[in-house]
Length: 346
Image (cartoon, rainbow, N blue to C red):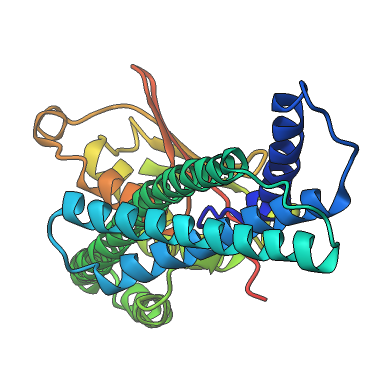
């Protein structure tokens, strides 16, 4: 949100006018005058006219001469015109006030060169003040705009990367599923038919989720249950998955197919057998979804791992929110904590 001088215009400028009145009253202490509301009003209106006029000149020059390459050239123009305006404004106000005092009040001409010099000094000082304030606002807002532009560019880059990530996930899933199907056709044709039915439901979800950035945790759980059926046909008792998702978090949101990706990563990197089963635990805990598996790494995979799957998940969260997954890896367990997102679409 751009920073403005709204409150300074409303409160600061009138305060300067009041301060200017009492300053000249103090400076004339050797010949004090009683309080004069007209003089106070004159100085306050003068300050307002100086500030608003200088402000409009500065904005006009910033727009009209934005193409001038040399900032020093632009700044010189700005100071020249604001100081010229300030001097003209002060002398016009001074003349009007002097005429009002002599003609309307019928008072003797008590305004001297001292008063004229004092008014012009105020004009010059305020011109410098206005320029300083506007320059500060200009640089601050320019910095904010540049920062927001960079953030927007980063988000656009992340979204493009996210699209690429989704394109990577689907062929990988398709390839693995057909490998399982090929094995089942040879082992058990009846199970292969059932597998095809489940596969069609799963791939229907995959196709529907391609254009989605988020899905509910309940929809992702249902997809994972079907996906596990396919995996169980291949790994039987070598793969043990326990799912414990609390009802309170079923309508929270996560990127689609991240659970499938984490499960595939666990299978890819670990030994799976009846003697050494892979245990995977999926549970909710205080607005986090925790995916945890025991470690029994394959030696060749441990060396060659590029961590592409985790990077893909990190990028997807980075494009969608300020929250990031937390990865914990020790000698016995590998754990990924996924933030559960609350989204208001209204």
